[in-house]
Image (cartoon, rainbow, N blue to C red; front, side):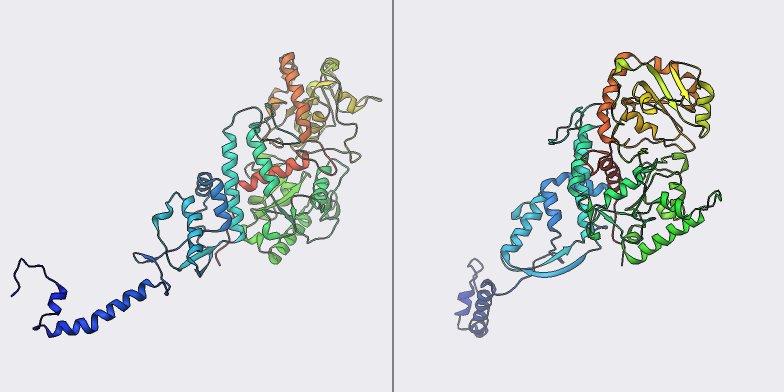
Length: 525
């Protein structure tokens, strides 16, 4: 018997003459054990590392890695806020591949370091099986937009009146902006990322066409500018687009399909229904979002009515409308207000500019025929009754409308049958303070422009008090508003071709902001 205090030794047991079985173990088992150890440490086999019962999975894409590296916390915050989470990213195509050890190390460092994990937390020394999730182009676009949202939110924290971003053409500044820095950041991101696909279905004149000389000129000008080959926003690849343009003209639909004085717009509605059905049948994008990343554009009063024939177009799509009337279903969070600009010759030559403030002898001016109840109240109260507040339904012979605008301090802009009025932009062109008299009207670009800083807004019930209200504005306040009207002109000027920060780009920016408000996902197969 072994003494209890003597250490037990495998080798002493093997050499004991009474241990026959120990000899067998030494002769057969030990060599097998040694050989196994040598094979396992030689690195000739591939190993799958496991934590518990789960195979190690690395979840990354190149685009997300770059975005996270540049703005890790903001991107993750935006992704969470806009539903870019594990559930929304689960619909991906997964492939399993074998990577070399040094490749795995590179991928792990890219992802784990961005997530704040130490690179030494997992020690991979041999080739491993790694599951890589390949994200769709749409998911990559949405991830980029998450970063954009975060960068705009960060810029909005800067409350300076002047943007801190460099720009060779124009740096937004002053109280005409709700937040100059946030607007500038958003505009620069738009120029960098925003792509619009224009559907090519449909033939002119109803599609791909519109008036460029009339009260509806902005409708035709936008379609023309959007379809130019050198337009920086247009893409021919629908998979890289963030929004999709339905290029039909409501003005042209009315001109060619509406029976005069019939008050029946069903023929217009059927044309739009058929058009959207063609788009939905031929392309996957409408059905993918139910139209939420599509937009239509109309300066005609019947724009809202035309869109109502397609429920998803009315309730989900981005509608860019001159008739921006909240009482008729205009939704500022998804719809954009469109400036109505009356270009009689198709050009703005001679329309921009006016007399200096000291030479403007008329307190307030309006000329226009009876058109809706607001104008009825205005004409009834002020028509040819006051030399300071000059209101006409028809100008006297020989009096020039544009010259009257340019020598007036304030220009009255009452709504007609619908809320929009070309007089708003006419006043801005003439450097005359616009006086908005309307119900339920959302002024253009009010996401970024503070209209109270350069215009006067009067409620309909206060029409009898117009003179009192305007006379109550001090000279110093009026001079400040006049300077701001001159500054805001650049955002309403029509150029051909377009220039940065002009009316075309501001309209595009309004669409861009609405696209940032939504998150699009691929439908489950």
